[in-house]
Image (cartoon, rainbow, N blue to C red; front, side, top):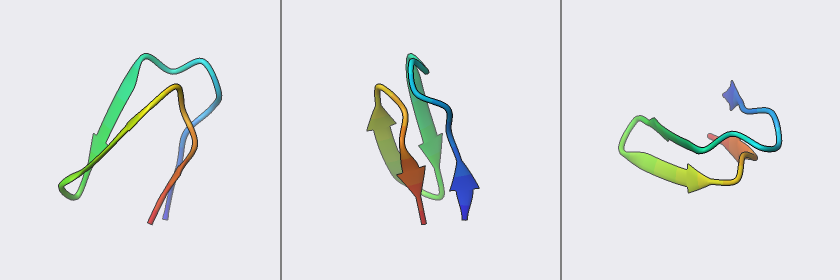
Length: 25
């Protein structure tokens, strides 16, 4: 599990992309 802090511009992990921050499993 990869933790992302709120306010993050964009995070891509294991093929999953999230905007604004959050949790990626």
